[in-house]
Image (cartoon, rainbow, N blue to C red; front, side):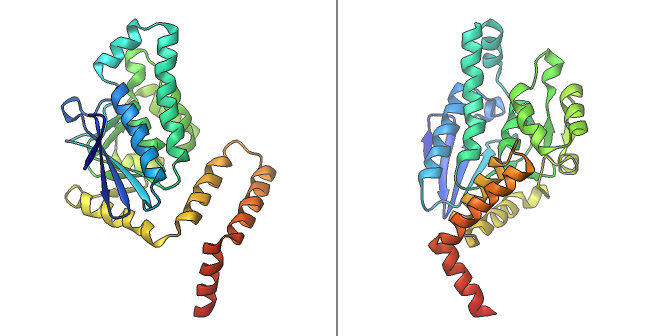
Length: 256
């Protein structure tokens, strides 16, 4: 096991890179070191040809409780330039998660709140323990969930998003799945084994095809229908010309 700074643990299990938010005494609250550690670890995993999937989880009982108190104090005391630089750092993390060439999976136990909820929903897939709680309580302290809103708006309907960000209430894992924030909910007692079984499924997938698929899906954000179709044509042609695709078609045809 290796550490990225003091706040993120990086561990390889076969083809899985496991990133653990390692501030359990602070409920894994976000600070500059943790954000930098996550960015470093994500780049490391993306550069490793053997990695097929990244799993982000939290040490202790919670996934991530949002910004820590020291960070909130910096926000209150900081200048416009300092607050802009701090916000951009988190923006870079959210953008990077979509650029990593393998699926990034959040494995959420306990609370995922504010920026922690944004961190989870910025992942490609969210797996939740039945005891997990999600929420955007920023409005309760007069803050705006500004950057996480861009992610939330792409995960849930407009009505659900408005409700979550203006009422600031916590919702259960089952409600989060109903809303579209969560892909799968697993029993608390089976959570670790269920997450392992789920992410191991990516070992059976072609890494290059998954990478192209992920890029295309997010590239289509904001495109017109026609532009999205044309981009699909371009990627389709690229995929057809890869050795992996041609070998896969050949294997499939032999079975027919």
